[in-house]
Image 1 (tube, rainbow, N blue to C red):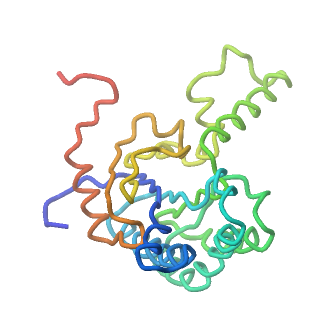
Image 2 (cartoon, rainbow, N blue to C red):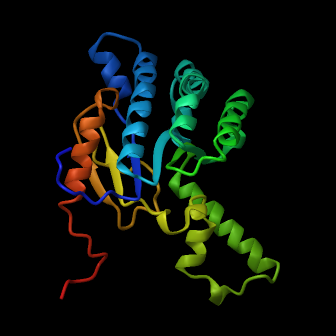
Length: 242
């Protein structure tokens, strides 16, 4: 990135797409692309932290991904172990906190244990948060939030007229991130132009950056280009300038 002063988005979210195609182009099994993609997460995490991003949310496994071949799903469930065993010391060294959104109950117990251990070991970190969306679906998250609110209404703790945008947002799994819950910038790699059930509510006014670069090839310079492009956007949030 040049010496020009850029505004760094507080919350960057990434749809990490293209692992399978990266492997296919090299006549390798799809799992090889996922393994390489994990290395890219490490690279982008460090770069985002260097630039001053406060929250980096990566779409690691969607609620729809269970429909993939069993062998591939099994491999994906083992990736957190590979990731944290090799990268956790560096996360702690860089004061990066690990967090998670999604339904952990459907994940293998070993995967849950590894994730919970990483969260516990980085709980003291006060820098950027690396947030994994695992077994996550934006629409399901809204359904869960509605159920939570309905339970409060049923218990007499909340009146229907008290339900507003802020109440719904606070009830989502990202509600814990308060003012930075909504991503300023969403990056999607591999040339696909869709949201794929990712942060459905939170993305209402996000800026989008699409690139043809496959996720395993997405490097620090590519991330910098996304930040530069973001700085050329005029975010009006539905308003007009005077």
